[in-house]
Length: 273
Image (cartoon, rainbow, N blue to C red; front, side, top):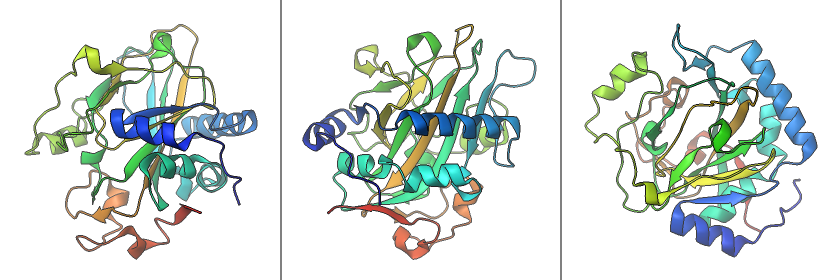
């Protein structure tokens, strides 16, 4: 049993509802940070079949991604089950229960100019509902000097979906996304943008419709290793035919089904006491 996380729930929920994004300090302790740094480094050294290199051949730097690590790596699975991240998600969303959705690594090496495009997460996902969020964990100190993510405050509110954005032009997904009927997301108004100076172990929790993106990592010696944990609440229902990720498509739930229909894939991690 994970000990209850000491947090100002009212302030967290208010920031999340108003802005679509909120900062949580020290979501992971030092031991967890070291454990997950080693896990990410291991994944980068021996990439899985799900791994992605977002920097094309001939371009400087490395922008690495991997996903569904919890299905094959005990450290990533423990990150879901043994840390307060699910509770943080639930208290931000005002959920009665929180389920595991999936995880992703995003790691930008020093001297990597490749940007993270403006995008929302929700349109990549085969789900509908308001209670879907990310708890984004910093494993390194992160600020504008090594490519901090920027969030467009309030961009989750209109309920408008944008076309999934390819993280690398010319990749297979770029062709798939080009056929989407959704509008292309424009660069947000600078006045709405917020970024956070993060210490290792800090977390940013944000809504699935939040428009966000990031510059490259121009630093000479500062890696930017992060893990995105995806969570859902009780109002989420399956949407057939919209997933951009093969492993999610294979869940193959009926349209409109709750994720409880696949408990083994999407287990409950936290319930409100």
